[in-house]
Length: 528
Image 1 (cartoon, one colour):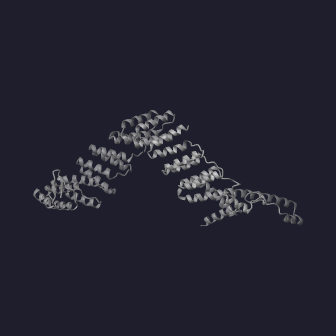
Image 2 (cartoon, helix red, strand yellow):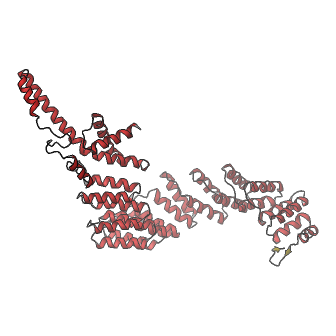
Image 3 (spheres, one colour):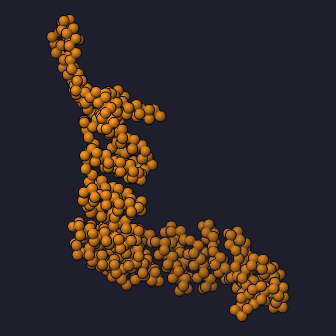
């Protein structure tokens, strides 16, 4: 609170043209130093940054000349004292004349004579016209205005930035491309492409020539939004204006093509880069390989990998990760494993989608061993598999009748706090049912209910089958489960009736069906 009061008092003193006190001198210089340091302050204290800039500019324009004037006056008085000390005490007559003479004094703020110092009415007139009292001493330069505009743009205060630009014109300080690039980039980062293009047009209308950075910001913003057509138009306009594109502009185009899986367009932009003599680096090659991965074109990706080696470019973790992705989507687990090992040697981690694709391909091929290995690799890489990935591994274990491993996967899910889907529950229940483990199937039903999952016809079939294959058979439990399923409005089918007949007998099963007023159609479905 004391600092705020000191700030207000010091600012009032400076704006009124009075001579600040020594405390205000120190406070002013501290804020001048902070005005430089706050360039590195985050957005969380933008109000403090603006206040420091506002007062720091005033302090720098006023306090510095005051101190210079005070120092010169102090030096003169010291010199006079030395002379008087050498000649002894001055006569009384000379002292009296000195008192009545009233020599001309210097104005502490401007170094002007008292007669030349602005009068109060004249100072007030300048303030009414928007002219700062210290404006005649030191006018803010372009760099200071750009710093203020950057502060406004960073906190999204575009009206404040507009006001600063108006002040630049008022004080005859011409904005340059850097001034407008600050605002164009701020709009682009905020995903306001219309605002970015508006500032670009304003820059051109003000007679400021756009540079490579100006166009690159617009092009990158269009590419991030996936608007490749407009980005290409800006790039062509850039070239037509005689401005040479840089590597970042082309990389943005290639990256956008990679996101859309447009490999042909990506390769075209690479060719144009080479024609203009721009270096093709690993970032460019990775973007092309990513485009190949999007469409699962492993052959084309391998070609670009070889091209990297011929160019003497050492693949990085991003390249190996992209190669692993493309082979994973192509269900080439053996080749993906090679890229995974190369990635591990560089200390990289594969993408989560890549291993998920490999687990899915192994599950489709019935390779439970490989599916479990990729799951373990995913856990070791701290990629946090979700319920879908665990479910795929569990399902393939059930398909190969490896119930022990299926149970281990299920327990691992619960240890990690991951709730299985109804499909995973039904898959494990069906495997247990064939072995007659009705108690475990009932336990799954209870856990499924706790997880908020509702029983469906697949799980009901597994439960009735477990009662039918149990030793001994459990007809009463099967009948009760059937009645509860009727209350849940579960869609019945022929498989459910077949399991019911096996559990309670065909005669009793038919009686239950007739009592529930269910009718079986030719498609083995039922309705009331």
